[in-house]
Length: 262
Image 1 (cartoon, rainbow, N blue to C red):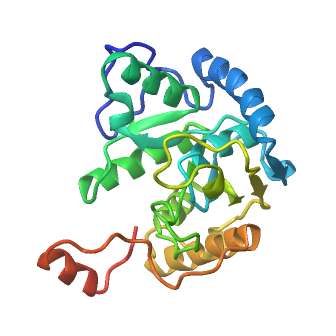
Image 2: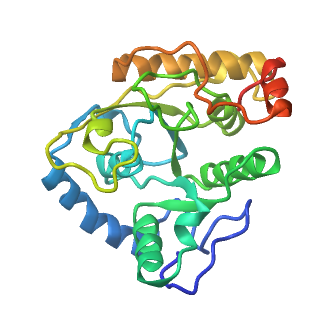
């Protein structure tokens, strides 16, 4: 795992560190041992449905996404189950004391660096997640793709369902409530005044939808995941994908054409 300011993020498609993600490094275990009781003491999170989390084996947590702290809330609430998630590689590439602290923090909460983007970068990210699952790890993913700025639950992209169908991994839906108040988008520090609720639903077996190479199977499996998340979060539904405004004529044309959102 990354523990020094001189370490570099792995290239897309590589998982960081030599240890199997199903057996977390001592640094991750130590960081979580310190972070978990601290977060629970400060934020007093309400955690519901922890009994729905399998103790071992490949697993996908599929959650709504409201705040930066979502990726801290899920590993803390799922403890003692170790959870991995992908984070922007820039969090691991800073310099000086701030860069070192960022690397230490994100490594401690189970983050794995990945270069974000479309095309090959997106395929590399999917491959990293697939490898983690095949190694028996648990990963946390956000089917909406990015944070909801208005609090609504957006339509899910099919990448999560693709991974579940490809690897045979069960999906535990997660409903986060109040994380957007605890740390709104744009805030530099979390507020200590707001409690958050983390709800884990029963594991979903999506295999009945069909194979991973079927677009229909991916879409219907994704819709089942999003329905389960909605039942847990209670958010207003947005009948649209969560996308930033298209930039340029080419991107506007691309979005107007029929295609599958991954």
